[in-house]
Length: 341
Image (cartoon, rainbow, N blue to C red; front, top):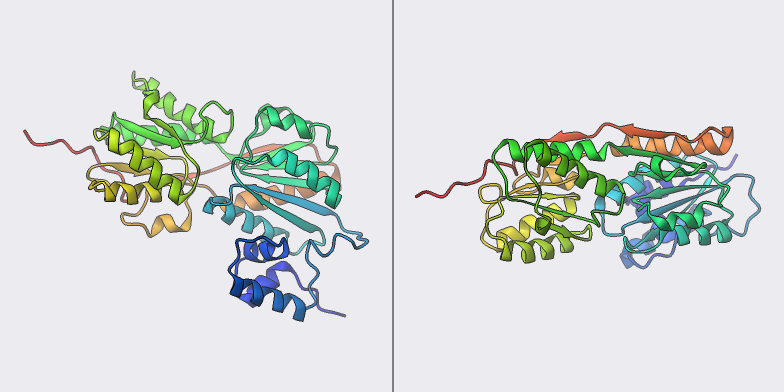
């Protein structure tokens, strides 16, 4: 019997991530040419039939769509890789689309269902707003990963997420408890109704609990990338030198912000405390090590894949699961510095 080669096997042979192999198979331009050549050579040697090449074949297995909204977000890339890893042993084909965080994932989903005859869909990093109406008529099961879709009231939609509101509250409590009052927040649209907006609502809840109110001037919308974190922090702290703490809704933004603070002559945490969100591997190696809210990537991936399969294969009813996040208290938080008289 011929050996069955999976995308995970190709990744291991090429010594790259599953996500990189998926990008090569999807003809993505953001792959190093040398890496692309190595992966394509192994694919050819092993006669591997990838998702794109399998589209024209008659298949008895199903096609699963995976849409990742946020090309520059290392957390979402890590989560997508874990989802692909969980699905690597399945007979189902996974067609992957990486889109910009400002792009429309629901229009992308409609195109994928037309082109690939998708029978199930996983959305990673989605924004649940009025645009979701575009897929309400789809009769395929979908799973929203990292966002609680319960409020969307879609009959065919499940979701897996952390309790973003409670974790946002916890972050604010940690900063307020050590004396910070002038705190900045970098995130996405605060009224979008998504998981990031819920983090901000929880953050504001803690201010209310302390009899305080958050100044909206201290909120900045920001793309979730190192560059965006750097530029947003450089702009904000240049005009708000009295701010003593920063909560960013992405570790990548936090790491970029720490570099900007350093370039502005500010030390973390002596001058500004910084807390991120996601718990990416790099957060353990920054200087100082980043305090963050760690999301359980492998658990989220496993639950998302299993939930979609249950809906596809067993006609299971949609469910909305909250998994536990962990607050990692490291070196980037300290009480605010009080200047000597």
